[in-house]
Length: 243
Image 1 (cartoon, rainbow, N blue to C red):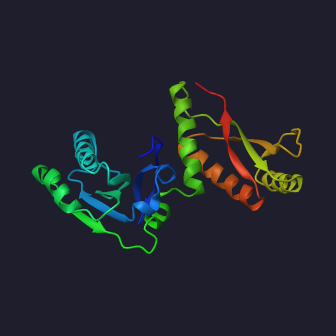
Image 2 (image 1 turned 135 degrees about the vertical axis):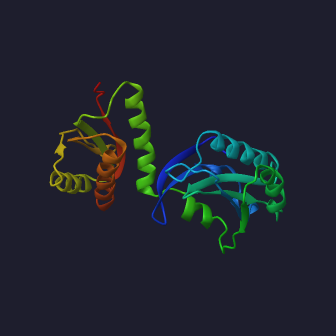
Image 3 (image 1 turned 90 degrees about the horizontal axis):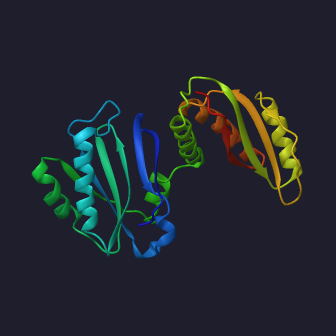
């Protein structure tokens, strides 16, 4: 497995969901050598209001998962997990058929957990990873947003105040940049005058917004969309710390 694990939040069937994922596993292994996806489904005994395990139970389930992971070294990988509505699904890829039911039953039964193993049949086995677990372009940006928001909080920012937020977007052509600039002005953004050349064409824009997690996600969703319409790539945001 890779060292690039991350987390994002979404909804599954209308319920809050937490997705923890090995973002780079597909870059570090030969996927065709691991054609057997399986899912271990665990029913959480006492989920919190978000539907995820809390406190001692969260630690216990994580420890039990680690025991499964330790037992598949050499022929399998744990690639992620999705937790929602009192259910945790743990995703694996194996190089050969594996009796995950027996291994999981041995680990979880003594703690009274109900488990189920799902055998996934896909024409392209890694579609499960990319189509179900892997974040889309908005969620990838939300992951970056969360890290910036956490940095602000660590610096003492209460996130209660609206403030000027700057954003950067890169383009392949001046025409695309000008098209983008015109569109974001209609959304209330100020476009700064920045030098551009053929090697570096970008826009720096700003607007007064709140930067709590949900508010900034709404802002970046808009900018990711407009950037895509203009063949551009949204590159993130920054702001001052307000204590």
